[in-house]
Image (cartoon, rainbow, N blue to C red; front, top):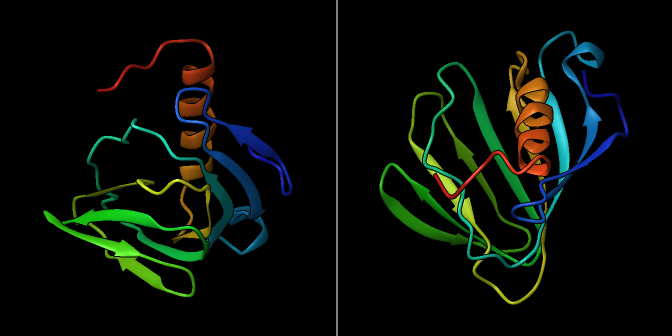
Length: 129
């Protein structure tokens, strides 16, 4: 399980996550992660969280979000909230690294998912799909 302050890296995309607040720290209410996404042609697959709201606050750079099939660019100082059960994915199409805070409410066990997902990437077991 991710520890507060732990940093993990997705070797396929270069995305870095630092765990700021975990479910264990917030009575299961929140997972908060500081993220850095370098420019990359690799996009995460479209997905949804069945029981979680996913919130992004862009600190620098920008990200393109496709939410329920509609694309929008989110820039520094802006926030986007994705409700449960809504298909989405995002990517950095800019020339600079995007820096943002990401929240999951409630936290559930999504931190373990990210640890596993990034480990699979590190081990060369992920492809574009």
